Structures are given as C-alpha cells and as structure tokens.
Amino acid sequence: MGNDRGLLQGKTIMITGASSGIGAAAARLFSAEGAVVVLMARRKDRLAEIVTEIRAGGGRAEAAAGDVTSRVDVERVVNHTVETFGGLDAAFNNAGWGSVGADIHETDDAVFDQIMDVNVRGVWNCLKQQVPAMLRRESGGSIVNTSSTAGLFATGASSPYVAAKHAVLGLTRAAAAEYGRRGIRVNALMVGATRTELLESAIRAVPQVEQAAAARAIQPRLADPVEVARAAAWLLSDQASFVTGGAVPVDGGCSAV
Image (cartoon, rainbow, N blue to C red; front, side):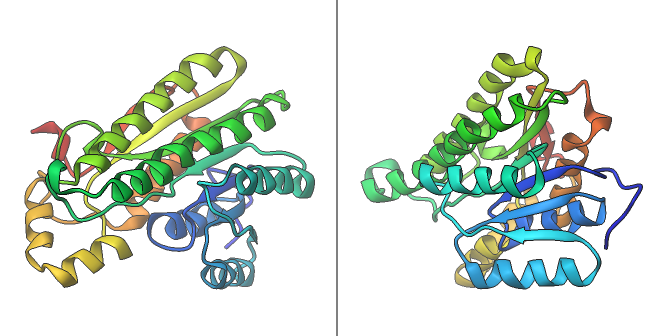
C-alpha cells in the first residue's frame, strides 16, 4: 500500500472520524498515496482493524482513539502525532454526526446540542490543536474540514445539521484568512449524499431516503466514500498549493442546480 511517489508522499496526516465511511476510505487512500496516517475515532476496534490492514499493505498507520468533542482527547492525539512522527503536515477533520430531519419545534434540545458539539466544536477543537503544530513547521500545513451541501442550503436535513455545516464552512473560511500568510491552507468539502454507515442506517429505516437523496444531484446516485476521500487528498497535497478558503463541492452537481 505504500507509495514512494504518491500524491501525499512524506506527509503525516491526522484523520478524524476514521473508523468508517469517508474517514476510513481516506485512511486507506492517503496511505496508498504515501502518507503516514494517524486515525482518530471513538471505536478502538474498528481503528485497529484499519491500521492492521494498512500496515499489512506496507503503509504506516497508527490508531489514536478519542472523541473530537473533548479538547483533551484532541490535544493528546495531536501531541502524540508530533512526538511520534516529528510533526503534523496535514489534517482531515471529517468526524460528524447527524439525525433524521424534524421541524425545529419538534427537535429536542439534546439533539441540537449533540449535532453542534460533534460537527462544530469538534472542528474547533481540532483547529485549535492542529494549527499550532503546523505553525512550528517551516513548510506550513493543510487542513480539510468536512462540511456538506447542507452547509450551503437547506437540503431536507435536520435544522441543527444545516446550521452546524454552515458553521463548519464559516470556521474554514475564518481559519484560512487568519493563517494563509503563515503557510497554512484550510478548505472545506461540501459533501453530497454519500454511502456511509450513517446514511445506510437511514435507508434501512426509510428506503425512500436513497432515491430522494440521489434525485437531488445531476449525477443521480450516492457517492462512494472514496470519491470524497480523493477530493480531500488533492486538497491536502502540494498540487493544491494555491487553493485555500474554498468550499469545494463533492456532490454530483447537487449544488449547481
């Protein structure tokens, strides 16, 4: 799986939400493109399986279990990455959580709090710890945050999720503006409906969800997680050296119509 001429050769990359879906696909792809990957998620067993798979293919990977809503956990993972591999070059802040859509007056406050905590505070915690590590490197760094088409317009997702993904884009643009002159690029992926475990569970509960989600896009299907991972890989690579503050759609054209 290792690649001495890959897109991400020589980079140490932290990936959150790495135990399944887009994060797991990114872990495999980034490793195949030559990166050292540090995988953060809450599910230790899933992380261990992915790390074992990557190492078996000749890649370098390490599991670092933790919760992005915990500043202490994120700080520990970033510090461990720096101490183990000599620094942090890039990060894919992909952890997120959503719920089945409901009208605002029917949405429990606890659901709002959890969605904002994972999606917004999780990215905030990561930026707070990752940026200082990257500032210590002369080469700067690159960060990609996973937002959503729900970060551009209301898509039928729950109101708290729409608000949270708008906030992720706002944090992305603010961080890009603050750190661009110091060599750190920050971009957001505006992701459309993707065949993740979370969406698959929704489809099992309400089969019509798949057709409705696919119908919004010009390419009327769900994305495969690796398609999103490929966009993140390019943004994290040196090939995207003049791209920062971007809201990059990976949505099959959903945001174009």
